[in-house]
Image (cartoon, rainbow, N blue to C red; front, side, top):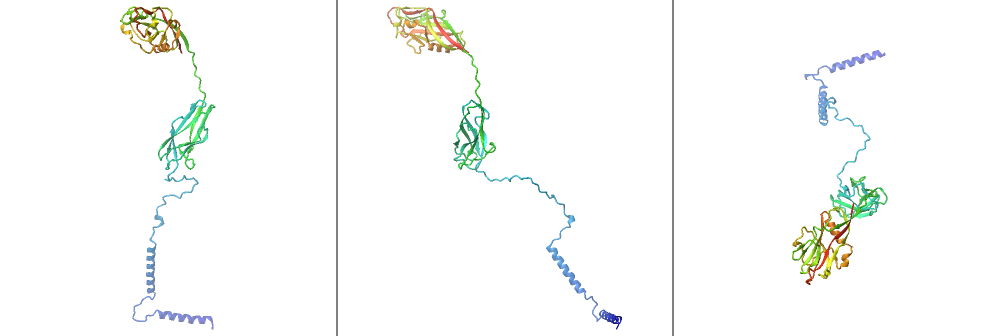
Length: 381
């Protein structure tokens, strides 16, 4: 049989089968047999879509998202500083100021001095058993270590060290630190390189101060006749400078006045001699009192009875106990001191007396003075 004869009957059978399937079979309404499967599939798809929506909320489209607020930073190689912390520091000091010997202070070679710094404890630990220690530079003969007393947190302390300037001219600097009880050197805020404090001096030979040679002068002062005289114990005033007693047993005291206005007020009195060139005696004046004539400093104006001094005063500048002593020109340092104190005034005045006013023998016992001289040596710048 040919292939064509076989193919034709096959297509006829298929056509009959398909026709039979499409023919109605009874009174039931006509419906698509695949409709149920289609509805079920749609129900399942809807449930799956709802479940997916619950599991992953709907996101807005990418086109509606706002642009990024910060660009991506490209890493750099900048070294970041360490992050500050609030960790307390146990041992930490702070330089406050120099109390003595500012930087650059000048000292003569070998001069002794004391350097003092003010330091504050800004750590949280008490300084107990701590020391001031030499670190480096010029020690200037200072102790290598000196104990520091107890210093609480926040407390300031003045640290001092005795030093000596070197013997050679120049600039010198020495560094000092604080060592704790464990032997550890502690840092110093505001200090040199954050760890020390120092003393810096200059050593120089002192400049010689030129001195002038003082001028030495000598002047001879004589008594002023118009102001001299004597006053007796009964109040009688006489223009002659006599001392002793009279035949009526009244005592007499002599008053001598010298013009010192020619001596500069700034002069220095170096020597004074008292010289009696012209005098005589009546009776035995050195038998009065204790036998000594004394001179006292006394300022007086016009002589009167009130100038007479009764009794035996103290404070004599000089005394003579014989005519031999009276005749010798002697250097009298107490008279020199009295004239020194009187400089600036125009007058230097003396009272001469025997401390016993009379011996009651009815005889005049007197020293009668003529010219009395003060030979004064002084210097001026």
